[in-house]
Length: 232
Image (tube, rainbow, N blue to C red; front, side, top):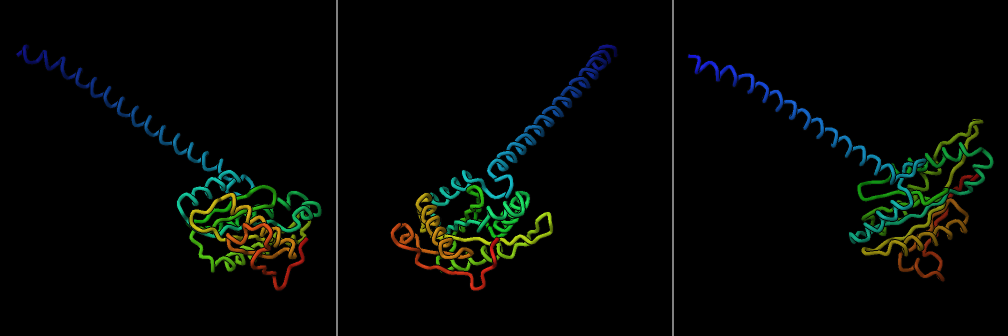
């Protein structure tokens, strides 16, 4: 009898000890895995935040250019819009930089709201923004530009004094064929933006990619707001 009981008396505590240690190890491994997952999520969140402009919540200049180049490598076509807020310095001078920042924030909200699955919006700096609408057909370019322009023109922004801050934007746009050169298209859209501002501001200047890249030729189409708002 003792020959049976003695091994059992020894084996039961040893088994319990091993079970306890295994359970501690399992919990430690689970805790470590959870910590690694939370760390990975935090890193990804920081990575995504670093791609965004802190004030407007659209892509930073570098992030936009990287994504635009990626669309080009993927042979995606679409519409590229270069946007500049009209008389923005006057807004800062007249109403203060807080009002100017609020204008920029609201413009960022408008641009993000108009972006779908294959669309991106970015801030190049100051009051200059840029958008790419992936898979947008050439014939839909003007309507798309007008939606953006009108949405900005109808923004409701008030200064600290309660005064209404009028906002408008000029847009230069170019259609990008599949395999487009990102830098060339940005230059072409920028040239069209210059034409839109020279044409009276609060306008859309639109040209095909091949035409817009000929620096000596003006944009193919110029559209002005039928009832322009009084820009500040």
